[in-house]
Image (cartoon, one colour):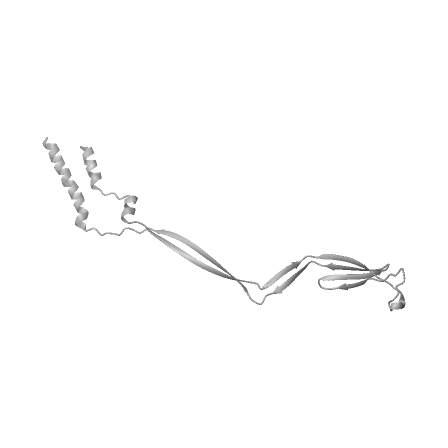
Length: 168
């Protein structure tokens, strides 16, 4: 008898699980796509690297007679070294035993070249955001007589069951 009353009380009471609540009030899924365009302006100065190098060369001085008007260079002839220095290189020249020798040394250099126009880089980004929004179930105001009807019905059913049990 106690089991019957307990079973009857459980059946009469409403039970809403989260699963049933989601079926009745499904969550909204918001998907937003954010598109960004980033424009970058690069510097218009381009740097060019030139590696250094050394060049050494010799050439023989030809001396002929004075009949054709050329100058006779006495053997052995030595001269001081002539040097020239610049921003990107240095050079040396000298005469040694009827040969002229030249040496050119170029330094490692970075040359900056400025362009007339601006370099423009455009990047395109897309971001996808998904947000799940849960709605609260609507609040329903239950009138007072509905609230009292279930307990009154349970008491009446219990009384009817007790009357049938006591008559036996």
